[in-house]
Image: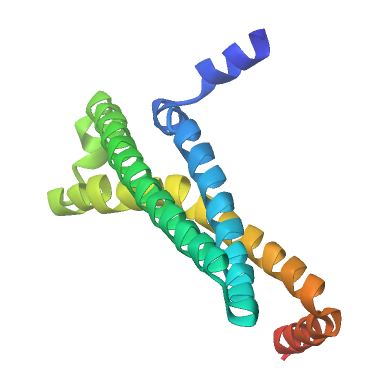
Length: 171
């Protein structure tokens, strides 16, 4: 317990500002995983609709599409709010750090350059930490789920795809 408190006390205000948004990133990671699994499930349900027809599979596909739409909208809203709040907190922490320094430390920079660092660069960092990492993990989950779906449908095709992918990486 003391080690965790000491570690938190040792971290700077910028790391502390971003640490507050780990729950939002975790929730976005779960949402990205659910979305990835839902997209693979929609492909499998679409196959059933085309193969068997029937209203129940079509209803399932429409319901799944609606759920994925609401999930995507909720994730976009959560990510946008979290990125904006994190960028604001990080800008505030950075500006507080600049104001505590001697003016000579930052007076050699143009004010436009400092303003650019306080806006664009900080927003990019927050965007990467909160939105990009969960989306990348979601893409990995989607790739694994798609491979499992292809394996369940036609195993030799998965071998061909993996061999072609490995060949493309080597070239």
